[in-house]
Image 1 (cartoon, rainbow, N blue to C red):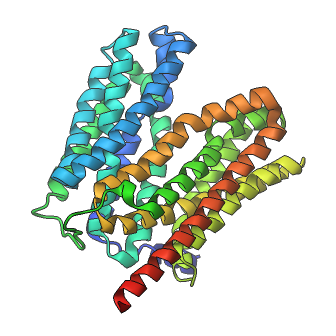
Image 2: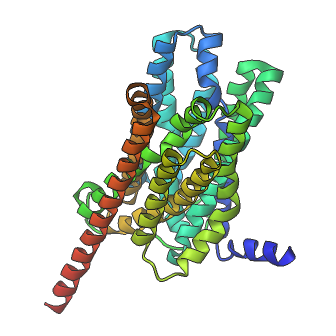
Length: 409
């Protein structure tokens, strides 16, 4: 047992002090967004908004995320990641506290959009900071550590949020959300101040290229958007499938979804370290992860045995563990060609788009075609992502060939 624990903790070796602090700040920030899982309940029960109104508010929630990611990337390239992260954390703290005092429908629409635009400025800036605080050989594991912090924050947040609502009501939840953002912001100012933090790698490119001119990167983003459309069914249509088709109780569905978080927490870092030591390229590993995700939908669609749900969850969990860290690392590696903030903004936006459309697409497919044909289509979407990964790999080979010819010439 000691040997097992030693090997597990050994996978975290080599990560810089700044990356650990960034992970802690991210954990506090993500755990602090407790109001988000309870937002629809708050809107219907406390403000008496209709389901139609709640639907539009949640749509603006997603649109604000897209705008925030783009704005965060642009500002990161102009004023630096440190200032953007600080502004985002401190301003979103104020926004969370003020949001509870907005009671009109139009006002809340504007408030949610502005809040998410401010809060999600943090993401591209954080990724650029991660690039600066990480050695190239540790970059993927640094991203994995941040993902662990995000997953822990999202796991702890709803549990703490429920207790806070019980003890203090929704008003207390908004206040604590705001204060945790302030705590994360103050920790950032105290620990990761440029005068104190050690920058391992600073990328500066003269006449940086615009991200949208990077053909290979755009192909990668298309692949990730398609992957996101398939993967995010885990948060919407899959739980309903478990209940409607397999008659699982809420407790059983919770345990099955909890298996995903458990597997990611236990296996992601050792898996990433093991895969990094293999001879496979990042793009090939991403392809394997996408195919595992596609296979998970095939398993639950063609095997009626209830144990297939567990197999499907294991497959989609390992697909997630491979695709997200390596695709993120690949995007960071591409960003050395130009504007880092812009690159990471586009990467974040690809998943925001998948979030916005993935749930409604899945629900509409189920309503009109039923689960069997829905899973057929979602499998094809995942396989389409795999095709784009193959195109990305082909584009990389062409790039390498052209650079070799230029060096010879």
